[in-house]
Length: 100
Image (tube, rainbow, N blue to C red; front, side, top):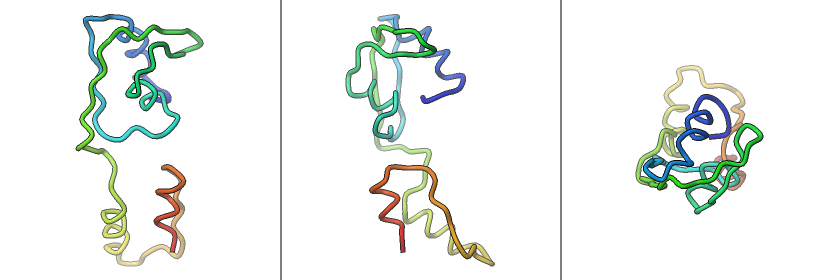
């Protein structure tokens, strides 16, 4: 929810109390998704303050991202593995857990 088309949808749907927003999976610290899941009642989107009247739901048991074990399995499966792998997405503590 940090950018892209979804922000346009949120801007129009969050003010409607008849609407619901479903979060599937993890929302990173400091993101709009995490703030909304934690009960934020007003959010800034496209330089506008948007009131949150929609109901917020979440299913935390699903994720669109691999966990550390899945990432390591994927890397081990590469015939000629990279000499160096850069970790560029995720929370600091989770990234540190993957350092060797």
